[in-house]
Image (cartoon, rainbow, N blue to C red; front, side, top):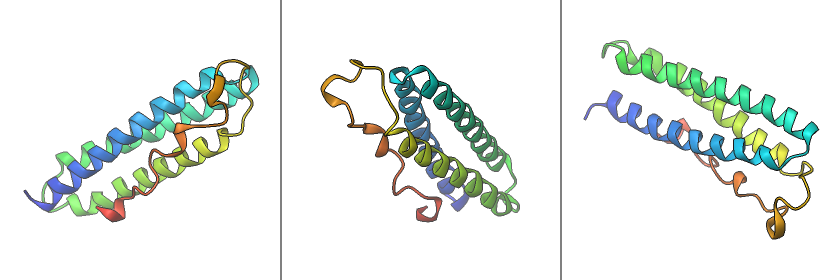
Length: 125
């Protein structure tokens, strides 16, 4: 398998993990108060745009000729980094937001959302 294909497959796996983490973050919004949910929904929309941009760059890279894919690699890494950073920031920022009473029960304050993408970076590819 060539370097382009290896990079593409690793980035596709990272994008799949980001999609899973975004789905978790999206569902977390159901437990917030109305005001917090509005802010949360704005973050979700922004994250979805970043995810779409990353997928687009990755698709462009996949369709690129062998001699130009290296120049597209930086764009994929850049959009991935922006997505990863924004998702981690959003998850972290919403950990302390007020929830609707009773929706979290005994797990209130505990959030599985802080674990997702930590440690993942295109540099490790």
